[in-house]
Length: 117
Ligand code: FES
Image (cartoon, rainbow, N blue to C red):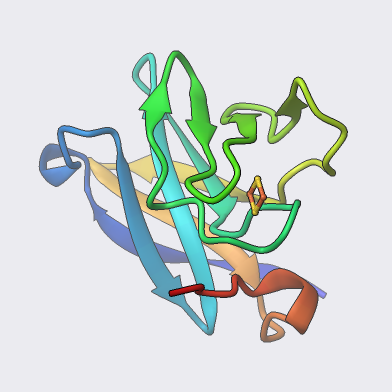
């Protein structure tokens, strides 16, 4: 099964707060910029499936807005708790455009965030 890249925007338009969310083929992708490098994560906390995109980005981590777990954006690893690593997606930048590869299959229930409230 191969993944294909999808354009998510221009580097020049990347938000000042260091994150953007893109919907690609049913996947919600959280793209973060850390020290000038872009990373793409599944927008779903591995603890209880909250969207991470509402969380604060700080010092290379994203904090889950629901219970406060912190994840290293570059590795997807949870810091200070034993929650599973976040799913990461391949990302490339070409000619000032950011592109992310997601699986060609739609996300399963284990890949989709649950919105509470
Ligand atoms: S859902 Fe993210 S820390 Fe609980």
